[in-house]
Length: 541
Image (tube, rainbow, N blue to C red; front, side, top):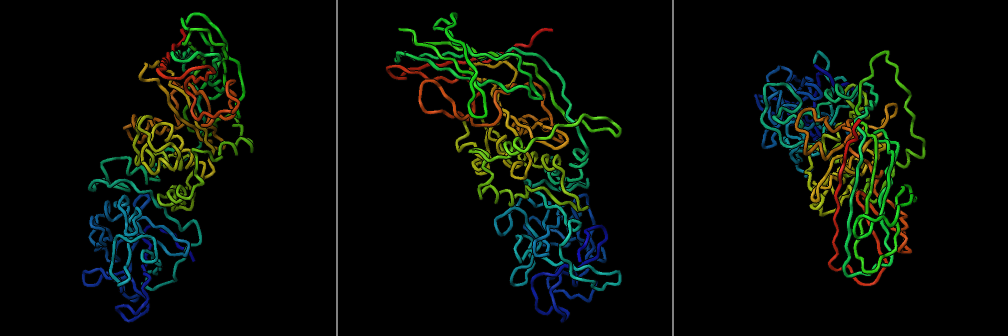
Protein backbone atom coordinates (compact mmCIF):
# COMPACT_ATOMS: atom_id res chain seq x y z
CA UNK A 1 0.00 0.00 0.00
CA UNK A 2 1.02 3.64 -0.19
CA UNK A 3 1.18 6.27 2.52
CA UNK A 4 0.38 9.94 2.49
CA UNK A 5 2.99 12.03 4.26
CA UNK A 6 1.01 14.27 6.57
CA UNK A 7 0.86 15.70 10.08
CA UNK A 8 0.84 13.20 12.95
CA UNK A 9 1.72 10.18 10.84
CA UNK A 10 3.17 7.55 13.24
CA UNK A 11 5.83 5.38 11.62
CA UNK A 12 9.09 3.48 11.99
CA UNK A 13 12.21 3.84 9.86
CA UNK A 14 13.86 0.56 8.88
CA UNK A 15 17.34 0.60 7.35
CA UNK A 16 18.98 -1.84 4.95
CA UNK A 17 20.64 -3.69 7.84
CA UNK A 18 18.81 -6.98 8.33
CA UNK A 19 20.31 -8.88 11.34
CA UNK A 20 18.48 -9.31 14.62
CA UNK A 21 17.97 -6.00 16.37
CA UNK A 22 18.51 -4.94 19.98
CA UNK A 23 15.24 -6.56 21.05
CA UNK A 24 15.95 -9.85 19.24
CA UNK A 25 13.47 -9.37 16.41
CA UNK A 26 14.12 -8.99 12.67
CA UNK A 27 15.11 -5.67 11.10
CA UNK A 28 17.03 -2.64 12.30
CA UNK A 29 14.91 0.36 13.24
CA UNK A 30 15.99 3.91 14.09
CA UNK A 31 15.20 4.67 17.72
CA UNK A 32 16.13 6.42 20.96
CA UNK A 33 17.19 4.17 23.86
CA UNK A 34 18.39 5.69 27.15
CA UNK A 35 18.63 9.15 25.53
CA UNK A 36 20.89 7.78 22.80
CA UNK A 37 20.09 7.38 19.10
CA UNK A 38 20.67 3.85 17.81
CA UNK A 39 20.31 2.13 14.44
CA UNK A 40 19.31 -1.34 15.67
CA UNK A 41 16.14 -0.66 17.64
CA UNK A 42 13.28 -3.15 17.72
CA UNK A 43 9.75 -3.00 16.35
CA UNK A 44 7.90 -3.82 19.57
CA UNK A 45 8.53 -0.56 21.42
CA UNK A 46 7.51 3.09 21.20
CA UNK A 47 11.21 3.96 21.33
CA UNK A 48 11.37 3.43 17.55
CA UNK A 49 8.12 5.22 16.72
CA UNK A 50 8.40 8.65 15.09
CA UNK A 51 5.76 11.27 14.37
CA UNK A 52 5.73 13.47 11.27
CA UNK A 53 5.09 17.21 11.62
CA UNK A 54 4.73 19.28 8.44
CA UNK A 55 6.41 22.68 8.16
CA UNK A 56 5.20 24.28 4.91
CA UNK A 57 6.73 21.99 2.24
CA UNK A 58 9.09 20.11 4.58
CA UNK A 59 8.83 17.97 7.72
CA UNK A 60 10.10 17.47 11.26
CA UNK A 61 10.63 13.93 12.55
CA UNK A 62 9.71 13.91 16.27
CA UNK A 63 9.98 11.00 18.71
CA UNK A 64 6.63 9.63 19.89
CA UNK A 65 7.18 10.95 23.42
CA UNK A 66 7.90 14.40 21.98
CA UNK A 67 11.31 14.69 23.63
CA UNK A 68 13.51 14.36 20.56
CA UNK A 69 13.70 16.00 17.13
CA UNK A 70 15.82 14.30 14.47
CA UNK A 71 18.29 16.49 12.63
CA UNK A 72 21.72 16.85 11.06
CA UNK A 73 24.34 19.08 12.69
CA UNK A 74 27.02 21.22 11.03
CA UNK A 75 29.40 18.26 10.99
CA UNK A 76 26.76 16.23 9.11
CA UNK A 77 26.11 13.93 12.05
CA UNK A 78 22.66 12.63 12.95
CA UNK A 79 21.33 14.27 16.14
CA UNK A 80 18.19 14.19 18.30
CA UNK A 81 18.20 17.77 19.63
CA UNK A 82 17.65 19.55 16.33
CA UNK A 83 15.98 22.93 15.85
CA UNK A 84 12.52 22.24 14.36
CA UNK A 85 12.80 25.46 12.35
CA UNK A 86 16.37 24.85 11.22
CA UNK A 87 18.53 21.75 11.05
CA UNK A 88 15.56 19.54 11.90
CA UNK A 89 13.80 20.20 8.59
CA UNK A 90 13.69 17.37 6.04
CA UNK A 91 12.16 16.45 2.72
CA UNK A 92 11.33 12.90 1.60
CA UNK A 93 12.47 11.66 -1.81
CA UNK A 94 10.92 8.39 -2.95
CA UNK A 95 13.15 6.01 -4.90
CA UNK A 96 12.05 3.68 -7.74
CA UNK A 97 12.47 0.65 -5.43
CA UNK A 98 9.79 2.01 -3.07
CA UNK A 99 12.21 3.14 -0.36
CA UNK A 100 12.72 6.75 0.72
CA UNK A 101 15.70 9.06 1.16
CA UNK A 102 15.41 11.75 3.84
CA UNK A 103 17.37 14.91 3.00
CA UNK A 104 18.28 17.85 5.21
CA UNK A 105 16.84 21.11 3.95
CA UNK A 106 19.07 23.28 6.11
CA UNK A 107 22.28 21.66 4.82
CA UNK A 108 21.05 21.09 1.25
CA UNK A 109 23.99 23.02 -0.22
CA UNK A 110 26.56 20.72 1.40
CA UNK A 111 27.84 17.67 -0.40
CA UNK A 112 27.18 14.20 0.94
CA UNK A 113 29.67 11.34 1.04
CA UNK A 114 29.06 10.59 -2.67
CA UNK A 115 30.15 14.10 -3.66
CA UNK A 116 26.67 15.26 -4.64
CA UNK A 117 24.57 17.97 -3.04
CA UNK A 118 22.20 17.03 -0.24
CA UNK A 119 23.14 15.10 2.94
CA UNK A 120 20.65 12.39 3.96
CA UNK A 121 19.95 10.35 7.07
CA UNK A 122 21.62 6.97 6.75
CA UNK A 123 23.29 3.92 8.27
CA UNK A 124 26.79 2.92 7.19
CA UNK A 125 27.74 -0.71 6.43
CA UNK A 126 29.00 -1.16 10.02
CA UNK A 127 25.67 0.00 11.44
CA UNK A 128 26.83 3.48 12.41
CA UNK A 129 24.42 6.40 12.08
CA UNK A 130 25.44 9.07 9.57
CA UNK A 131 24.04 12.40 8.45
CA UNK A 132 25.95 12.63 5.17
CA UNK A 133 24.52 9.68 3.26
CA UNK A 134 23.76 9.85 -0.43
CA UNK A 135 20.75 8.33 -2.16
CA UNK A 136 22.26 4.86 -2.44
CA UNK A 137 21.15 1.84 -0.43
CA UNK A 138 22.70 3.06 2.84
CA UNK A 139 20.74 6.29 2.61
CA UNK A 140 17.41 4.58 1.98
CA UNK A 141 14.69 3.64 4.46
CA UNK A 142 11.45 1.70 4.58
CA UNK A 143 8.63 3.76 6.10
CA UNK A 144 6.45 1.45 8.18
CA UNK A 145 3.22 3.04 9.48
CA UNK A 146 2.24 2.35 13.07
CA UNK A 147 -1.34 2.21 14.35
CA UNK A 148 -2.51 4.16 17.39
CA UNK A 149 -1.80 1.12 19.55
CA UNK A 150 1.80 1.08 18.44
CA UNK A 151 1.60 -1.99 16.21
CA UNK A 152 3.04 -2.09 12.72
CA UNK A 153 0.45 -2.12 9.96
CA UNK A 154 2.42 -2.76 6.75
CA UNK A 155 5.59 -1.88 4.93
CA UNK A 156 5.12 1.13 2.69
CA UNK A 157 6.02 1.18 -0.99
CA UNK A 158 5.77 4.16 -3.27
CA UNK A 159 3.02 3.65 -5.82
CA UNK A 160 1.06 6.87 -6.12
CA UNK A 161 1.78 10.58 -6.64
CA UNK A 162 -0.07 11.15 -3.37
CA UNK A 163 2.91 9.69 -1.55
CA UNK A 164 5.49 11.94 -3.13
CA UNK A 165 7.07 14.85 -1.35
CA UNK A 166 9.30 17.42 -2.95
CA UNK A 167 13.06 17.41 -3.10
CA UNK A 168 14.57 20.87 -3.49
CA UNK A 169 17.59 21.91 -5.47
CA UNK A 170 20.75 22.65 -3.52
CA UNK A 171 20.93 26.25 -2.28
CA UNK A 172 24.04 27.87 -0.82
CA UNK A 173 24.78 27.36 2.85
CA UNK A 174 22.17 29.28 4.84
CA UNK A 175 22.87 31.41 7.86
CA UNK A 176 21.85 30.27 11.37
CA UNK A 177 18.13 29.75 11.98
CA UNK A 178 15.82 32.54 12.98
CA UNK A 179 12.63 32.37 15.01
CA UNK A 180 10.54 32.71 11.86
CA UNK A 181 9.27 29.36 10.62
CA UNK A 182 10.38 28.87 7.01
CA UNK A 183 11.59 26.01 4.86
CA UNK A 184 15.19 27.17 5.09
CA UNK A 185 15.77 29.75 7.84
CA UNK A 186 18.23 32.16 6.25
CA UNK A 187 19.03 35.83 5.97
CA UNK A 188 18.90 35.59 2.17
CA UNK A 189 15.32 35.23 0.97
CA UNK A 190 16.23 33.61 -2.34
CA UNK A 191 17.45 30.52 -0.48
CA UNK A 192 14.12 29.82 1.16
CA UNK A 193 12.28 30.87 -2.00
CA UNK A 194 13.99 28.16 -3.98
CA UNK A 195 12.20 25.44 -2.01
CA UNK A 196 9.18 27.40 -0.79
CA UNK A 197 6.68 25.65 -3.03
CA UNK A 198 3.76 27.20 -1.18
CA UNK A 199 5.09 30.64 -2.11
CA UNK A 200 5.59 29.54 -5.71
CA UNK A 201 1.93 28.55 -5.83
CA UNK A 202 0.86 31.79 -4.23
CA UNK A 203 2.70 33.72 -6.93
CA UNK A 204 2.12 31.56 -10.00
CA UNK A 205 -0.47 28.92 -9.17
CA UNK A 206 -3.43 30.77 -10.67
CA UNK A 207 -4.55 31.29 -14.27
CA UNK A 208 -2.98 34.27 -16.03
CA UNK A 209 -3.27 36.24 -19.22
CA UNK A 210 -0.65 38.31 -21.02
CA UNK A 211 -1.24 42.05 -20.75
CA UNK A 212 0.33 44.15 -23.49
CA UNK A 213 0.74 47.92 -23.09
CA UNK A 214 2.13 50.41 -25.59
CA UNK A 215 5.22 52.17 -24.23
CA UNK A 216 6.59 54.34 -27.04
CA UNK A 217 7.56 54.71 -30.67
CA UNK A 218 11.28 55.00 -31.30
CA UNK A 219 13.68 55.81 -34.10
CA UNK A 220 16.77 53.68 -33.60
CA UNK A 221 19.94 54.05 -35.65
CA UNK A 222 23.17 52.08 -35.70
CA UNK A 223 25.93 54.08 -37.42
CA UNK A 224 28.85 52.01 -38.58
CA UNK A 225 32.20 52.99 -40.13
CA UNK A 226 34.93 50.72 -41.43
CA UNK A 227 38.30 51.79 -42.86
CA UNK A 228 40.65 49.40 -44.68
CA UNK A 229 43.74 51.48 -45.56
CA UNK A 230 45.73 48.59 -47.08
CA UNK A 231 42.96 47.17 -49.25
CA UNK A 232 41.79 48.26 -52.68
CA UNK A 233 38.16 47.23 -52.42
CA UNK A 234 36.35 46.13 -55.56
CA UNK A 235 33.11 45.13 -53.85
CA UNK A 236 31.52 45.81 -50.47
CA UNK A 237 28.84 43.62 -48.88
CA UNK A 238 27.13 44.90 -45.73
CA UNK A 239 24.57 42.92 -43.73
CA UNK A 240 22.13 43.50 -40.85
CA UNK A 241 19.06 41.70 -39.53
CA UNK A 242 15.55 42.44 -40.69
CA UNK A 243 13.90 42.69 -37.25
CA UNK A 244 10.94 40.31 -36.82
CA UNK A 245 7.43 41.74 -36.68
CA UNK A 246 4.89 41.58 -35.27
CA UNK A 247 5.97 40.37 -31.86
CA UNK A 248 4.04 41.00 -28.66
CA UNK A 249 6.85 43.40 -27.65
CA UNK A 250 7.31 45.25 -30.95
CA UNK A 251 5.74 46.32 -34.20
CA UNK A 252 8.35 47.28 -36.79
CA UNK A 253 7.17 50.20 -38.91
CA UNK A 254 10.34 50.59 -40.99
CA UNK A 255 13.77 49.00 -41.22
CA UNK A 256 16.53 49.86 -43.69
CA UNK A 257 20.25 49.45 -44.36
CA UNK A 258 22.17 52.05 -46.37
CA UNK A 259 25.82 52.37 -47.46
CA UNK A 260 27.43 55.83 -47.74
CA UNK A 261 30.79 56.83 -49.23
CA UNK A 262 33.87 57.82 -47.25
CA UNK A 263 32.41 61.22 -46.40
CA UNK A 264 29.32 59.69 -44.81
CA UNK A 265 27.11 62.03 -46.84
CA UNK A 266 26.60 60.40 -50.23
CA UNK A 267 24.42 57.31 -50.46
CA UNK A 268 25.87 54.64 -52.72
CA UNK A 269 23.69 51.57 -52.01
CA UNK A 270 20.39 50.57 -50.41
CA UNK A 271 19.85 47.22 -48.68
CA UNK A 272 17.54 44.55 -50.02
CA UNK A 273 15.50 42.02 -48.04
CA UNK A 274 16.79 38.45 -48.29
CA UNK A 275 15.94 35.16 -46.64
CA UNK A 276 18.66 33.28 -44.77
CA UNK A 277 17.35 29.97 -43.47
CA UNK A 278 14.47 30.75 -41.11
CA UNK A 279 15.56 34.39 -40.76
CA UNK A 280 15.44 37.50 -42.92
CA UNK A 281 18.34 39.90 -43.41
CA UNK A 282 19.05 43.20 -45.14
CA UNK A 283 22.01 43.12 -47.53
CA UNK A 284 23.53 46.13 -49.28
CA UNK A 285 26.14 45.71 -52.05
CA UNK A 286 28.36 48.47 -53.45
CA UNK A 287 31.29 48.78 -55.83
CA UNK A 288 34.54 49.97 -54.36
CA UNK A 289 35.53 53.54 -55.21
CA UNK A 290 39.18 53.94 -56.23
CA UNK A 291 41.38 55.41 -53.50
CA UNK A 292 38.50 55.37 -51.05
CA UNK A 293 39.19 52.87 -48.30
CA UNK A 294 36.31 53.76 -46.00
CA UNK A 295 32.53 53.47 -45.99
CA UNK A 296 29.71 54.29 -43.59
CA UNK A 297 26.58 52.20 -43.09
CA UNK A 298 23.34 53.19 -41.37
CA UNK A 299 20.95 50.60 -39.96
CA UNK A 300 17.62 52.34 -39.18
CA UNK A 301 14.63 50.93 -37.30
CA UNK A 302 11.32 52.63 -36.50
CA UNK A 303 9.26 50.61 -34.05
CA UNK A 304 6.32 50.69 -31.68
CA UNK A 305 7.33 49.04 -28.41
CA UNK A 306 5.13 47.31 -25.84
CA UNK A 307 5.56 46.17 -22.26
CA UNK A 308 4.40 42.69 -21.27
CA UNK A 309 3.26 41.38 -17.89
CA UNK A 310 1.10 38.58 -16.55
CA UNK A 311 -2.19 39.35 -14.84
CA UNK A 312 -4.32 36.97 -12.82
CA UNK A 313 -7.64 36.07 -14.37
CA UNK A 314 -10.52 37.23 -12.18
CA UNK A 315 -13.45 34.78 -11.92
CA UNK A 316 -16.04 35.66 -14.51
CA UNK A 317 -13.60 37.74 -16.53
CA UNK A 318 -13.81 37.17 -20.28
CA UNK A 319 -10.43 36.56 -21.88
CA UNK A 320 -9.61 36.20 -25.57
CA UNK A 321 -8.60 32.75 -26.77
CA UNK A 322 -4.85 32.31 -27.11
CA UNK A 323 -3.85 30.86 -30.45
CA UNK A 324 -1.98 27.61 -29.70
CA UNK A 325 1.32 26.79 -31.34
CA UNK A 326 0.95 24.54 -34.35
CA UNK A 327 3.03 21.33 -34.40
CA UNK A 328 5.72 22.87 -36.60
CA UNK A 329 6.08 25.93 -34.36
CA UNK A 330 6.22 23.81 -31.23
CA UNK A 331 8.88 21.54 -32.72
CA UNK A 332 10.95 24.55 -33.80
CA UNK A 333 10.89 26.08 -30.32
CA UNK A 334 11.76 22.75 -28.66
CA UNK A 335 14.67 21.80 -30.91
CA UNK A 336 18.24 21.33 -29.81
CA UNK A 337 20.84 23.60 -31.39
CA UNK A 338 24.59 24.05 -31.28
CA UNK A 339 24.08 26.12 -28.11
CA UNK A 340 20.89 24.61 -26.67
CA UNK A 341 22.45 21.16 -26.31
CA UNK A 342 20.23 19.67 -23.63
CA UNK A 343 20.47 16.17 -25.16
CA UNK A 344 24.09 15.87 -24.02
CA UNK A 345 24.49 13.24 -21.25
CA UNK A 346 26.43 15.59 -18.96
CA UNK A 347 23.63 18.16 -19.14
CA UNK A 348 20.93 15.62 -18.36
CA UNK A 349 22.97 14.32 -15.43
CA UNK A 350 23.35 17.89 -14.15
CA UNK A 351 19.57 18.28 -14.29
CA UNK A 352 19.15 15.12 -12.21
CA UNK A 353 21.84 16.08 -9.71
CA UNK A 354 20.18 19.45 -9.08
CA UNK A 355 16.57 18.18 -9.08
CA UNK A 356 15.55 20.52 -11.89
CA UNK A 357 12.70 18.35 -13.12
CA UNK A 358 9.09 19.40 -12.44
CA UNK A 359 8.15 18.17 -8.97
CA UNK A 360 5.40 15.95 -7.66
CA UNK A 361 4.16 17.75 -4.56
CA UNK A 362 2.90 16.41 -1.26
CA UNK A 363 -0.75 16.80 -2.25
CA UNK A 364 -0.24 14.68 -5.36
CA UNK A 365 -0.24 17.59 -7.81
CA UNK A 366 2.53 18.42 -10.25
CA UNK A 367 4.26 21.80 -10.38
CA UNK A 368 2.53 24.02 -12.91
CA UNK A 369 4.57 25.27 -15.86
CA UNK A 370 4.75 28.76 -14.35
CA UNK A 371 5.78 27.50 -10.90
CA UNK A 372 8.41 25.23 -12.39
CA UNK A 373 9.77 27.95 -14.70
CA UNK A 374 9.96 30.33 -11.74
CA UNK A 375 11.89 27.79 -9.65
CA UNK A 376 14.40 27.24 -12.47
CA UNK A 377 14.71 31.02 -12.83
CA UNK A 378 15.51 31.33 -9.10
CA UNK A 379 17.99 28.47 -9.30
CA UNK A 380 19.98 30.22 -12.03
CA UNK A 381 19.90 33.52 -10.13
CA UNK A 382 21.15 31.79 -7.00
CA UNK A 383 23.89 29.57 -8.41
CA UNK A 384 25.48 31.49 -11.28
CA UNK A 385 27.62 34.57 -11.82
CA UNK A 386 27.10 37.21 -14.51
CA UNK A 387 30.15 38.31 -16.52
CA UNK A 388 30.64 40.58 -19.51
CA UNK A 389 30.78 39.09 -22.99
CA UNK A 390 34.55 39.54 -23.18
CA UNK A 391 34.93 37.38 -20.09
CA UNK A 392 32.94 34.43 -21.46
CA UNK A 393 35.97 32.27 -22.17
CA UNK A 394 34.49 28.78 -22.25
CA UNK A 395 31.64 29.39 -24.71
CA UNK A 396 27.88 29.84 -24.41
CA UNK A 397 26.64 26.32 -24.92
CA UNK A 398 24.46 25.13 -22.06
CA UNK A 399 27.11 22.53 -21.20
CA UNK A 400 29.77 25.26 -21.12
CA UNK A 401 27.78 27.36 -18.65
CA UNK A 402 27.00 24.58 -16.19
CA UNK A 403 30.72 23.85 -16.11
CA UNK A 404 32.00 27.42 -15.68
CA UNK A 405 29.08 28.62 -13.47
CA UNK A 406 29.22 32.02 -15.18
CA UNK A 407 28.22 33.59 -18.48
CA UNK A 408 26.63 36.67 -20.06
CA UNK A 409 23.05 37.50 -21.06
CA UNK A 410 23.20 35.28 -24.14
CA UNK A 411 24.57 32.34 -22.19
CA UNK A 412 21.91 32.66 -19.49
CA UNK A 413 19.06 32.80 -22.01
CA UNK A 414 20.52 29.70 -23.68
CA UNK A 415 20.87 27.85 -20.37
CA UNK A 416 17.34 28.71 -19.25
CA UNK A 417 15.93 27.70 -22.63
CA UNK A 418 17.84 24.43 -22.52
CA UNK A 419 16.35 23.44 -19.16
CA UNK A 420 12.80 24.29 -20.18
CA UNK A 421 13.00 22.73 -23.65
CA UNK A 422 14.35 19.53 -22.16
CA UNK A 423 11.06 19.32 -20.24
CA UNK A 424 8.81 20.05 -23.21
CA UNK A 425 8.32 23.80 -22.67
CA UNK A 426 8.84 25.81 -25.89
CA UNK A 427 11.13 28.85 -25.69
CA UNK A 428 12.42 31.52 -28.01
CA UNK A 429 15.56 33.59 -27.55
CA UNK A 430 15.26 37.27 -28.46
CA UNK A 431 18.54 38.82 -29.61
CA UNK A 432 18.84 42.58 -29.98
CA UNK A 433 19.55 45.82 -28.15
CA UNK A 434 18.05 47.96 -25.43
CA UNK A 435 15.90 50.76 -26.81
CA UNK A 436 18.28 53.22 -25.14
CA UNK A 437 21.15 55.14 -26.68
CA UNK A 438 24.61 53.70 -26.17
CA UNK A 439 28.18 54.89 -26.40
CA UNK A 440 31.22 53.66 -28.28
CA UNK A 441 32.08 51.54 -25.23
CA UNK A 442 28.56 50.46 -24.25
CA UNK A 443 26.58 49.36 -27.27
CA UNK A 444 23.46 48.25 -25.34
CA UNK A 445 23.41 44.77 -26.88
CA UNK A 446 21.32 42.30 -24.90
CA UNK A 447 19.62 38.91 -25.08
CA UNK A 448 16.36 37.91 -23.37
CA UNK A 449 13.77 35.24 -24.01
CA UNK A 450 10.22 33.96 -23.69
CA UNK A 451 8.68 30.58 -22.87
CA UNK A 452 5.29 29.38 -24.00
CA UNK A 453 2.47 28.42 -21.64
CA UNK A 454 -0.57 26.79 -23.21
CA UNK A 455 -3.66 28.93 -22.73
CA UNK A 456 -1.59 31.95 -21.69
CA UNK A 457 0.99 32.68 -24.40
CA UNK A 458 4.62 33.78 -24.49
CA UNK A 459 6.03 34.66 -21.05
CA UNK A 460 9.17 36.88 -20.82
CA UNK A 461 12.36 36.05 -18.93
CA UNK A 462 15.70 37.82 -18.42
CA UNK A 463 18.00 35.80 -16.12
CA UNK A 464 21.02 38.08 -16.56
CA UNK A 465 19.20 41.17 -15.29
CA UNK A 466 17.70 39.12 -12.46
CA UNK A 467 21.23 38.39 -11.28
CA UNK A 468 22.59 41.91 -11.65
CA UNK A 469 19.62 44.19 -11.01
CA UNK A 470 16.91 42.51 -8.92
CA UNK A 471 17.77 42.49 -5.22
CA UNK A 472 14.21 42.42 -3.85
CA UNK A 473 12.13 39.40 -2.85
CA UNK A 474 10.44 37.59 -4.58
CA UNK A 475 12.76 38.39 -7.53
CA UNK A 476 10.11 38.71 -10.24
CA UNK A 477 11.22 42.02 -11.74
CA UNK A 478 12.64 40.18 -14.75
CA UNK A 479 10.42 37.09 -14.68
CA UNK A 480 7.10 37.18 -16.57
CA UNK A 481 7.69 40.88 -17.31
CA UNK A 482 9.19 42.87 -20.17
CA UNK A 483 9.52 46.62 -19.70
CA UNK A 484 9.03 47.47 -23.38
CA UNK A 485 12.54 48.93 -23.64
CA UNK A 486 14.03 46.31 -25.96
CA UNK A 487 14.29 45.89 -29.74
CA UNK A 488 14.53 42.32 -31.02
CA UNK A 489 16.73 42.01 -34.09
CA UNK A 490 16.37 38.27 -34.56
CA UNK A 491 14.82 35.25 -32.83
CA UNK A 492 17.06 32.29 -31.94
CA UNK A 493 20.79 32.01 -32.37
CA UNK A 494 22.25 30.85 -35.66
CA UNK A 495 21.37 32.75 -38.83
CA UNK A 496 22.25 30.13 -41.42
CA UNK A 497 22.46 30.19 -45.20
CA UNK A 498 23.65 33.79 -45.59
CA UNK A 499 24.60 34.67 -49.17
CA UNK A 500 26.98 37.58 -48.73
CA UNK A 501 27.43 38.15 -52.46
CA UNK A 502 31.21 37.94 -52.16
CA UNK A 503 31.99 34.33 -51.24
CA UNK A 504 30.47 31.25 -52.83
CA UNK A 505 30.07 29.49 -49.48
CA UNK A 506 26.95 30.33 -47.48
CA UNK A 507 27.72 31.88 -44.10
CA UNK A 508 26.41 31.42 -40.54
CA UNK A 509 26.31 34.12 -37.86
CA UNK A 510 25.20 33.10 -34.36
CA UNK A 511 24.42 36.57 -32.92
CA UNK A 512 23.74 39.46 -35.32
CA UNK A 513 23.15 42.60 -33.25
CA UNK A 514 25.52 44.76 -35.28
CA UNK A 515 26.43 45.41 -38.90
CA UNK A 516 28.81 42.94 -40.49
CA UNK A 517 30.65 43.23 -43.79
CA UNK A 518 32.66 41.35 -46.42
CA UNK A 519 34.89 42.71 -49.18
CA UNK A 520 36.44 41.58 -52.44
CA UNK A 521 39.69 43.33 -53.32
CA UNK A 522 43.46 43.37 -53.33
CA UNK A 523 45.70 43.94 -50.33
CA UNK A 524 45.37 43.02 -46.67
CA UNK A 525 43.39 43.92 -43.56
CA UNK A 526 46.29 45.36 -41.62
CA UNK A 527 45.52 48.57 -39.70
CA UNK A 528 41.79 48.27 -40.25
CA UNK A 529 39.51 50.46 -38.13
CA UNK A 530 35.82 50.28 -37.29
CA UNK A 531 33.42 52.29 -35.16
CA UNK A 532 29.75 51.97 -34.31
CA UNK A 533 27.25 54.01 -32.33
CA UNK A 534 23.69 53.08 -31.32
CA UNK A 535 21.25 55.95 -30.80
CA UNK A 536 17.57 55.71 -29.90
CA UNK A 537 15.20 58.68 -30.06
CA UNK A 538 11.60 58.46 -28.80
CA UNK A 539 9.13 60.07 -31.19
CA UNK A 540 7.22 63.02 -29.83
CA UNK A 541 3.45 62.63 -29.87
